[in-house]
Length: 123
Image 1 (cartoon, rainbow, N blue to C red):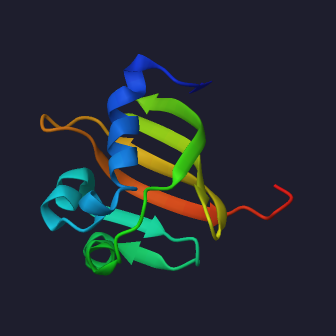
Image 2 (cartoon, rainbow, N blue to C red):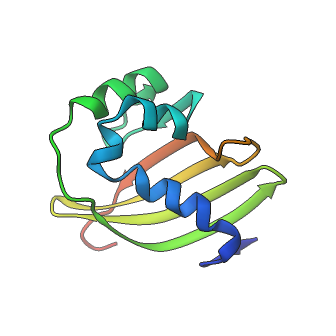
C-alpha cells in the first residue's frame, strides 16, 4: 500500500535526497555506501547504467544546487524492501523517479534500482 510521509521511511528519504546533492554525487565512498553493488539505473535519456558506470558519471559532474522534490510516496514491498516514488524539479524540466531500496543492511539502506522519466509540460 502506498503511503505519504512517514517516520518509518525517513532514513530512506534522507538517503534518496543525499544522492541529489553534488557533495555526495562527487564522492565515490559515499556513493558506494548508498548504491548496491548490483545497482542499475534507467536514466531520463533511456540509457541503462550499472553501479560502476553511474559512480564514474556522477563523479565527473559539475557541482550544482540540489533540485527540489515533491510528491513523495512509499510502498513497503517486503520486510527489507521499500519502493519510493517522487518528483524532481530542475530548471530543464521535471522528472518522476522510482527507487527500490534494500533496508536489510546494518550500515544503512542501499538503492538497488532507479528509473527516471521526464515529465511533459502538461503532466
